[in-house]
Length: 275
Length: 349
Image (cartoon, rainbow over all chains, first blue to last red; front, side, top):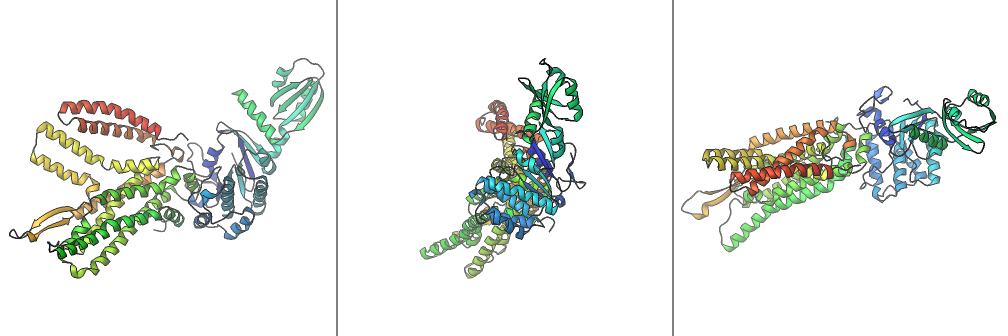
């Protein structure tokens, strides 16, 4: 698995698929048993120099509940050499975090905003976000996504994001990977995924059952038949495939783009079936 | 030193434990400073009533206070719990591990802040005692109450509680649950003494009372029980057999320098082991009772054997046979309890 500098990489998967574990390996929290995680050719585990440049927003509150936000701010300032108070103040105009409040007095959404705010203020080269929008209202969700995109555009930040909000992933990510049972099952650029995973609505001349024949074609994930219309999901859409359908007696073919959410659902169903 | 002290970690830990430092200062002041003040007041009351004065009131006031030793161990256990409790029970340890700190820095800074907290408390108490000593120098017989008593107390107690604290840090490094590990750490230090007592009892029962062997055991007690290192020995001295007024009690430390050296060596050893363990610790097993799978048999068999010996000592006082039967039964029970503890006290998260 490789993530390009200055890109946004999205990881999606069901609950318990291994997204958070992968992220904890990427941030050097967990020691990997096999393989290695390299950033600029260096192992991330116990590597202070690399970690100075990594911002990490976890999926649940991680801060010391007894600390005030201003104490956390001080802790971050002492930890990260490039932490910017100006950036913090500037972003906090939008985030509106009361710095005198203790962490335990903040709502779930506010805790998440605090985490994002602090991690953006350390001016990271790599920003790792685990479910960053959970517990946030739609306005701030949109605001955060736009800040992340701005960071990539202005500072060439590499973003690794895991989320169940697939519409966000679809909107901002350059590359996406699907993880299941701890394994990366699919990895592709967003554009390639959109171009190759398609839904085809096909009507055949004869009403005979050709499902078996269709499933034998490479890349066909799922077939649903309603009346005369066959809804065929493929992960390898090409013009050649369309031609094959015509050769098999297709009368009418319509190619429909799929959302990332649809792609994910079909993909998971297919994997479940194979298991 | 700059490489070891991480200002961010130091700041974080200090915020957590500053109240414990205050508590330690209060406790030390209560037992030691108030101890000598009480001794002086007692003398003044005795003087008014025409009773015998205690010449060594400062020495006696400083060395007294039986419950002091228990309270201080409790404070040290509390200190270790506070340093770890917020992190092990939540995602906070993962947060710290994701930041630019090495594992060695994390554990060393916890230890350093804990040591600083203890050191500060002892230094503050030392200053209070010195001021009090200087203020009452006219009422003091400085030969019988030398200033070195304060210095001796300061060094032995500081070394003693830093050593116990370091051992509890080691227990924290190999165990998951922060409260249980601190308590278990405190108990483990008593195990060598407990085993020595059981073996001594068995020897006496089997071979009968042999004074020389008994004396050897008594010497061993003093060395295997770290908790006894800073205990003051009381000695009644009568320098003039014709006058009861010349009877006095003096408090002193036995094998003082050797014990200081021993405490220093043990502290270094425990700290080294704590660093090695914490570096090897996998955070995903943070909530297990014993973080390292290969140390689980040590816990199981340690618990099992101690349960058997404890039950044997309690119920088998009369004969070796009863001792043997009770030990075997409770060894088996202890085995299952230890397994149960491993299960119950390890969170499945």
